[in-house]
Length: 261
Image (cartoon, rainbow, N blue to C red; front, side):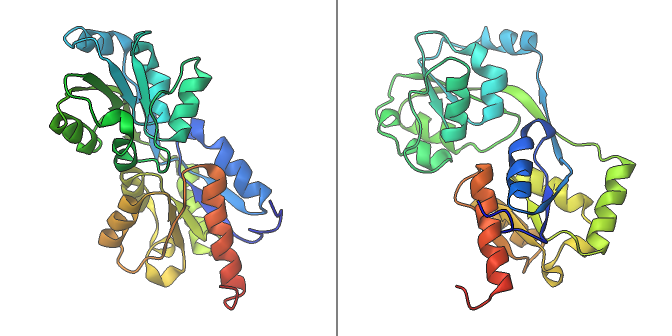
């Protein structure tokens, strides 16, 4: 990676603190400046509460993990015989890192639609499937698998809570926005986008600022358009840190040389 590719660019990093090291390292390696202000905290639910809920559910044939956090806080639920599904490669990597095998994952993509396209999830009539996730989330995965004849249960293993912004973080953010030091805003989910926009000063939001939203999710872009019509958004090819940074580099270089399409 070119160590000056993002020189002069400021990036507001909003991932949970325990998941921010990779993206910060990639931003700084490319010559950018990372402002680290998480907007969401991931809080594990007590295992005793999860276990009590599991007691009322049938033993699953397949467990599907919708995020790395779901793996971190819910892999202990997986019986040894069960097949494990992952919403994308990062989630599959977390399963493997924990000593298990990811049996079902999208060949391309990292969302419910991509996972549902996999051959292993087509003929699931009579199968018991457990979807391991955080609070809330989309219902498409479960709805579609039920329509295909599976018995589907959900288990929530963590909660997303707005990160309490300290006075120091608020002052740093306000100063950076006022001085025009932030050029890119990262948002990985609609929940993180909502929390981010709630705390952003006007200097860092809206079409007149030149600040770009960067996300791997079409759903985030659609949500941003509803709240801030006209805001420029960049769609990264993948939520991996290197792909998020690649999207910023391409845009930053295009701004520096508009003839370089």
